[in-house]
Image 1 (cartoon, rainbow, N blue to C red):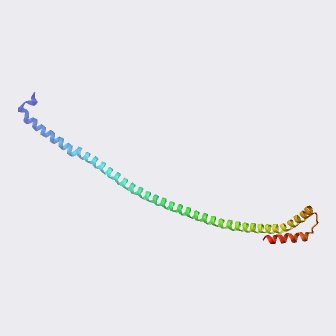
Image 2 (spheres, helix red, strand yellow):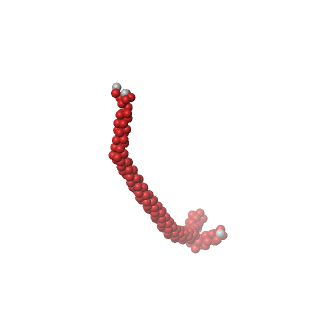
Image 3 (cartoon, rainbow, N blue to C red):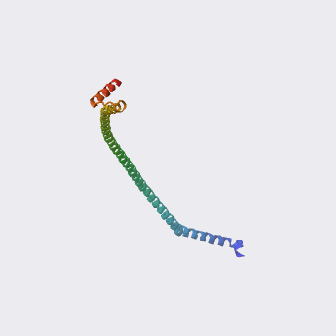
Length: 163
């Protein structure tokens, strides 16, 4: 085998060095710059994507803050409206309560007046009824006829005596 012959080593080493230098030159001049350009473009794209993502995150944070602020304002407004409605309903209920209380007080007073009038009329008629009962009792039990004035006077005397 001629490759293993030591007399050919010098020529083989020479061509080996030439081949490696040529390969190194090709790699340094052609392949490595292209690889570096690709890596640089990829890094530039990644940096741009990160910058856009950061900008989008900032915009999303602004939108979220505005949303939260508007949501809080909406809640405050709704609570204010609910509070106002509750106050209005309480005022209306108090007004109706006062109106109903006044109406019921008037009706109670009118009923008391009617009851007092009925009681007075009943007390007056008790005397008349008692006089008629006394006349009828005297006629049926004793057999004598008593006039209305005498029976009324007797009933009044009996009623005054019981008071």
